[in-house]
Amino acid sequence: MALDFYALDEELQDEERLVRDNVRRFVDQKIIPIIGKHYQDGTFPHELVAEFAELGLLGANLEGYGCAGMGDVAYGLAMQELERGDSGVRSFCSVQGSLCMYPIHAFGSDAQKERYLPGMAAGELIGCFGLTEPDFGSNPTGMITRAERLPGGGYRLNGTKRWITNGNLAHVAIVWAKLEGKVHGFLVPTNTKGFTAEKISDKFSLRASVTSSLIMEDCEVDEDAILPNVSGMRGPLTCLSQARYGIAWGVIGAAIGSYECALEYAKDRVQFSKPIAGYQLVQQKLVTMLTEITKAQCLILRLGRIKEAGKVTPQQISLAKRNNVAMALDAARMGRDILGANGIMYEYPVGRHMMNLETVYTYEGTHDIHTLILGQAITGISAFD
Image 1 (cartoon, one colour):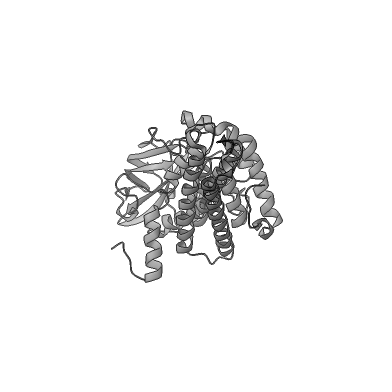
Image 2: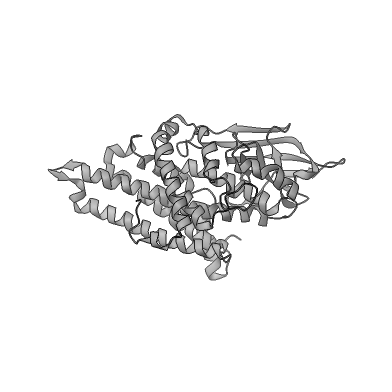
C-alpha cells in the first residue's frame, strides 16, 4: 500500500480504490521496470499506449465515445499512480485527455466528436495541444499564430508553437490561433501540407516524453476544422484548468515514489555502525516529506470532491497545482539528498523525479503565475497589468 498516513483510503469509494489499485499494479509491472532506460535514451514507451487505452486512461473522466467516464477523484488517483512511475508517462495521458479530447468533447461539433474521440480513447489517434509559442508562454493572449479565412472556404494557418507534448507522436493537433483578432481552436491533421513537427531533444527533464515545436507555413484546413462552440481565451484556459487538476494529483505520485525510495534506502544504508534512518537529520527529512505529502493528499481529495460537485473554480485548481508541485519538487530534492551520491544514479527514481518536476513546476502555468492568479483572487487587484 502506497503512503497513506491519514487513512484517506477510507474516504474513497470502492470504484476509486479499484481504479487506483489497477493503475498501481500496471505501473509496478509495466512502467517502473523500463522507464529509467527510456529516460536515459530520451525515448517514449510507445508500446504502452494500447495498454493505457485498455485501462481507460485516455479521456478517462469524459463520458461517451468509448471513454471510461471515471469520476474526477478516480481520474486523479490514476494520474497519481502514473506519475509515481514517471511524469512523462502521466503527461502523455494528461495531454491526450485533458488538452486534446476535452476541447473536442466540450467545444466540438457532433461530427468532430465522432471523427476523433473514439479513436483517441482507443489510443489509435494521438493528439497534441498547440498554445505556447516561442515568445508567448505565460502571456498566451500575445500569440502570433494567425488564421485567415480562405475565399472558397476553410482557413490558412501560419505560426509556430513550442514545448508541445506529444507533438511528433500526434495525428491531430489542436492549434489555437487568432482569427480576425479573436482566439479560436483548430483541429489540424498533422499530415496536412504546411504542418511540421520538430522534436526537441536537448533537454534534461521529461526525457521519456516527446516534446516538439509545431510549425505552420500556409497550412490550409477545411471549414469544419474550427471548434464551433468556443471563442476567445476561455477555450484554451478551460482546457488548462482540466490539465492542471490532473497535474495536482499526479505530482503526489512522484513525491510518494521519492519518499518510499528514500525511506527504504535510509533503512538499508549503514554509516557509523547504524542505518542512516537512525540519525536525527535523516529522520527530519523523512518526517517533512511525509507531512507535506499527507497535507497535499488532503488538499487534493477535497478539490476532487468540489470538482465532482461542479463547483470548482480555476483559482482553486491553481492553489493545488502551485502547492503540490512545489511540495513534490522539495520531496524529490530531499530524497536525492538522503541517497547521497546514489541519488543521481538511474538505478533509483528520485533523481529522475527531481529533474522531471523541474518541468512540471513550469508548465501549465508557472509557480509564479499561479501565485499571481491567487493574489488577484484574494485581493481583487490584478498584478498582470
